[in-house]
Length: 87
Image: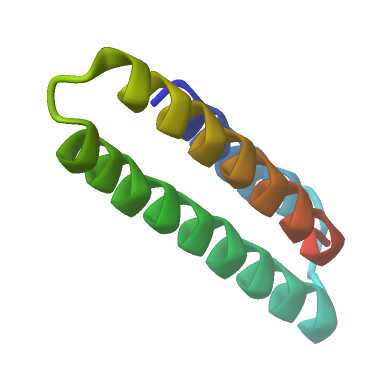
């Protein structure tokens, strides 16, 4: 859950940086929308897998921790995959 605020911070930072340009090109606007969607999908996927981890692990702390760590790494990898879309 600590990664979620980081992802949202990244999204807010990217939005605020685009406000510095006088008028972003259509291409930049399109890239920004694609980047936002990529981040949103990453966050949604992470949240769904975290819920599944809690359901599967229900009560077994080691299973929950192990699965949570694996999904966190996958989430970070997915965020890195979105970097190429950042305007």
